[in-house]
Image (cartoon, rainbow, N blue to C red; front, side, top):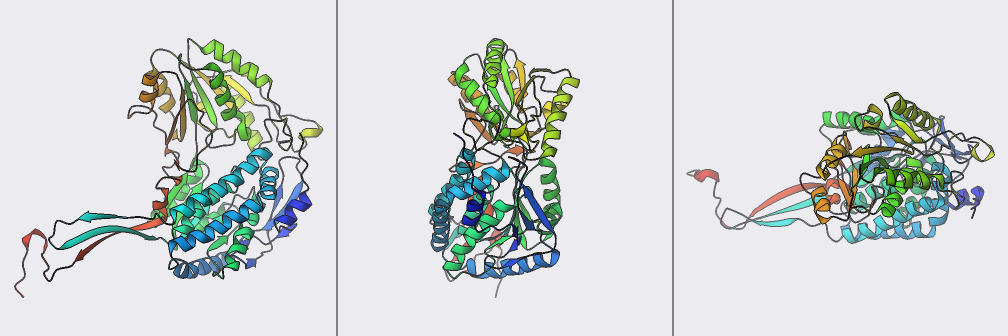
Length: 514
């Protein structure tokens, strides 16, 4: 069923205008002369514009944020959690228009757009509970009459740089946790999805204003990489959480590292599913197809490689070709379509280059790709999902192509050989194995198994659950967001020793005759 978006109504519900100030400390907004125009990849039409942040405006933001931190950190954590709860309630109220905006500005399906807002709601719920569990540990001291414990304190200003593919959820993952931890946040959304940032900032700004909280707890800056450099270079930003390409992450890590700041990096993925002779073929096809073509292959957890045992290779290959024949590409607001557009023409060029490169290296394209044309594809960003038979050592296979291109790889012999192929890339985000064998599954999850931050059994690589820590190893950056104890990165750790006696024993038996 085709869903029509009443864009005027959506923008009005979210208090978004045709031309929007792009810099904010909460209720206060600043507008420069330069702007970013937001064009929908769905139909190529202009949605609106957002002004970019100047150096002067950035300084005003940081001054406001550092001032707000001094007040915000003193509010008890459960009360900070109450603010996050109210934010979650507002998201529930505005889920429909915000989900539609995400879908239209980014190009993902409406179900995915609404699902992303639901992720925001879920992380708020998680953070509210967390606000009463920011616990440390008590330890026994080696000194008589002493007690030791460790505690966690608010860190300060957290800079958040997010990517276009999840234009609201990744911000929420970071900011909901940071707020309950007592931090204040400065967010630079992707310049490809700036209106989603405007919408989110206005929602939280209303909550903060209703609670008479100061400007600077939630801040917004907009622009290209040069605006991102302002926050990464600023020593007042105690933590930089950056989501994007590995290339971007290395630059951020170097810049922040030089000033001895903290980084949380969520970077590239080159995710594989291992398919053993013990696998259920039907389950495998479902997981692989969704992982490879969902969000038009523009997830960091998208399935890029399918490593299949030679004994079932031909059967799985045939099943995949048959499944791809059924994929419908088109307007993501139409429920009959499975795949929407890529984000822009640069992404299309990257997709086409991958198809050229894999053939140059000796690969065999078994499901051809192409850029689609016609009245339904006026943006020029719609492409057909492709499958290529390849080898793991191909340069094109070793890099991440942010598009629906799946590489079919063959392995022989034991499961160890498949694991070796899976691990033989620079990225280490998500991984999966399809098998009915407990031995194979446990080996895959062992010390000598997958080297990724996420390792799944009998489900695909795509997606994340709020309760678990999300992130990866190697060129993925090593960061962890969302669940488990990911909150600790947003706080500073302190060890305390208390002497409750009238004596002061010194280390190594040293004595002063005083």
